[in-house]
Each structure stands twice: as C-alpha cells, then as structure tokens.
Image (cartoon, rainbow, N blue to C red):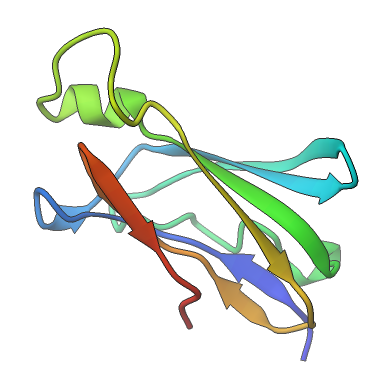
Length: 116
C-alpha cells in the first residue's frame, strides 16, 4: 500500500464542516521547513483530493497549518486579534499508509487525532 495524507475540518461550535479554510503542508527536515502543498476546504470541510498524494508521499516529519482566522471572522468572531489565527500541527508519518489528520475547530480551542 502506498502512503498518502488527507485532512478535514469540522466546526464543532457551529456543528458543520468548515468551508473555505486554506491549509498549507510543509515537509520538515532538521531545521528546514519547506512548503509542498496548499489546498482550500470545500463545502464538506475536506480538500478535493489528498493534500499529499501517493506519488509524492515520503515518510518523515510534516506540518499542516490551518489558516483559520478569516473563517472565524466570517462566522461571527470579531476583532483584529483572534485567539486562533493559525493552527500548526506537526506530526510524523513513519510508514507508507493512509494518514488522516482532521481538525475539530471552535473559536477558542481545537483538537486533532490520527483518523482513518
């Protein structure tokens, strides 16, 4: 089985998928952090395809950065300085498998896990 990475975002405060959030994917190597992908969530809170497809998969350390600020403002958060403007999640992929890293989002907190 070849490896690949998927993600999605659920707005737990509103009880719905989070549409229109930009997600950046970086590969981490030592002190180097290189952006390798960018996607925007669709109406289902998912990217249209794997953010890291099989053809580009390598084991190693990665970071997803969820740019949540504009979404939170569009959905009722006021102010220039938000509590969660961006959410970086750094994680490792040690084997060629399907990794799914979802984000459960609310204006003042979030959680994640390795999904399926």
